[in-house]
Amino acid sequence: MLKKLSFSMKGVCPILVIGTMSSGKSTLINALAGNDLLPSRNKACTAKEVAILVNDWKLQFAIHKIDSNGKYSLVEKATPKDISDFNQANDITEMIIEGAIKGIKSHKKLLLIIDTPGVNSMNPAHEKVTKEVVDEYLDECLEGLILYVINAQQIAVYDDNVFLTYIAGRLKKNSDFNIIFVINKMDSIDLAREKQDELLADCKKYIQERGIVNPVLIPVSAGSALLFRKVLNEEDISEFEEENFARDFSHYKRKEHSVVDQMSGWGGETDFVQIDGARYTKAEIYAALKNTGIVTLENELAKHY
Image 1 (cartoon, helix red, strand yellow):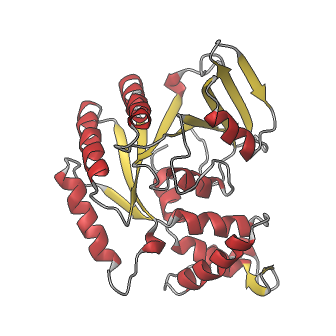
Image 2 (image 1 turned 90 degrees about the vertical axis):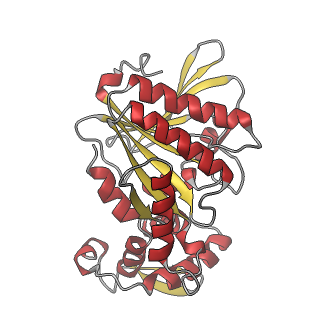
């Protein structure tokens, strides 16, 4: 596909988003994009490798696709439904989504974000695709980045244990690839019973025991971050999302983080939105967004490309 688009892999920096099924990989990408770009549900919803070519100048997402007969076609203005349909279509062998990802900016190289089906011992086909993607990029690319997503509620489960050991072995053969561990779904942890620092320390120890030296861990709530960004962008949200917004905002506004220097871009007390009868200033929502960890992740990503 990249050859058809006249791009050389030498000028592309791949970012592989990997992990076990339902760890929140697609939701994390959506949080970076600020909208429901990829389908994300509480089941396996990424059937094949889905690549996103970051183009800061493209306001509307497009789909480049190749069918089983090798025929190339382009959808200039793609909707999330188009992306979901093509992802599930058996006659589509390759697909690249092209557009701007607000949380990631291309600089020296073109950024290619690859969402994978994830590993699951109950679905060997998805695991096969995920490992093929990892092997292809680590073998062919001189450099790149792996975002390894771990569900905070399922640390050290069997599938993750086996897959992480495999990834550690592959990275020994290509040390030019960096890796960041995103500990996702932190909002599902009862911090009254389990301290975040202790959870992250246990997770770090688990990763190190699998062969990763000095791992970078970033706790994130991708679901909350996506919801806050959709509200800040004044996108329509469902009744269910409105209920979740009130809960998530209440949770993340309480955290004591200094965000005064980040509020100027979101206006003052007069710049507000109304959700389910309640009023929220955009500055307050952005403060809560920062506390989800997504901005910390974006700042860490910026160091690598």
